[in-house]
Length: 315
Image (cartoon, rainbow, N blue to C red; front, side):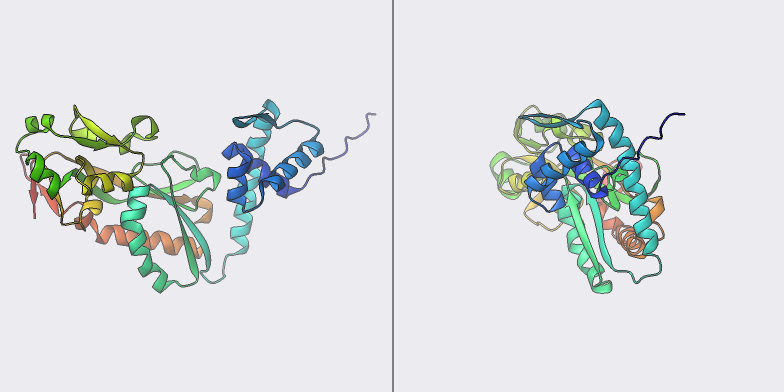
């Protein structure tokens, strides 16, 4: 009869450090997320490797990549993480709606729309801390990088509760100063003589952010940025014409619409984990976001309606 294999002994916290390095591929970034020193991250990963008797990462000057064993462990570790999070939330059932809720979204809607409105939520729910994470990449909701995801597309993934919350309009805008120097286009052909501001194509992770190409392909792009805030600064300083969401341009009277019929509409989706639907603080944030976006639909759509011939009529 063969001798039973002794169970592996390791610290669950080491798995947390392993997951952070696997996801961020860098000790410094993992340390920042975990709020510890990078030497602590390195030590905990080495301790886990010793406990398991296997190398989990290939180390190089460019960062950390998973070995074959590390990749297999990653799948199991994420399952353990999800179960641990679900257990933590279950223990919290019945408690007052308090604690932190992390919302992940794109920079534009986070900075120009959500942030100002979250003040009203804070007044109603002072015990809930909202953390707003904005990024140019697509955050992975299934990996618990956030409790709530507000995005312009329906995110893939199992175990998600997703609903369309509303829409927003994206149109061409330019500053008064730019139009005074270069003239105001009266037809699409006039745009050939104008300067444009756009995203950096290779850093756009989802097609829903490629809104300029929906309506026009400019011949002369003078500035590109992954940041909508930077694009907004470029437009307001008179560098060119850009496609901006209505909620970005609405509060700046110096920005003027250019050929309003050249516009497009994007959906707003709110997603969260099915196993956290019972958590009161998450439910309160989701309800607030859904209600706010619904009430702001006229504002988010630019105060415009479509005529039967598909032209835009400004209210």
